[in-house]
Image (cartoon, rainbow, N blue to C red):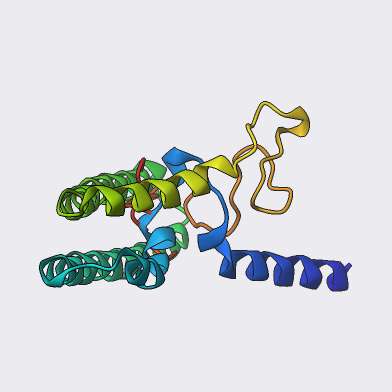
Length: 186
């Protein structure tokens, strides 16, 4: 039993490490997942000097937002643990913290999308097609959830929209997009 659990954990870690290359539904694209792909993809775009500068600015601002988000979520996790240690906890208090994090993440996601869309506006037509192709490839690999058993492609038998190891359920998915990416959907 322990061996099977260990194997399952190792498999999920291995799949998680390749997550940037796996397909996800549009509304589950996260900046944390897409941002690691940008350095390699940037090379294929053959950016001019102005585009390079804008890319650097957007990339560094995006990474800063995601670092802050990750720190905030770590603090939230610790706060939740301490609150849940109190047997007289009113769960609405915890819910308010989760709602606040969700709202902050949604606002960040919107800002991240806007920054990256501004960068996209600065690209020429051929570069925009490359970006659209990259995002399209991510979406095309998704097997519709209506298939028997609710299985989707890309995550090794992932069932009906569940994504393990993401923390507070669906809360805080965001940005265009690992920890914290740029989410198309939120």
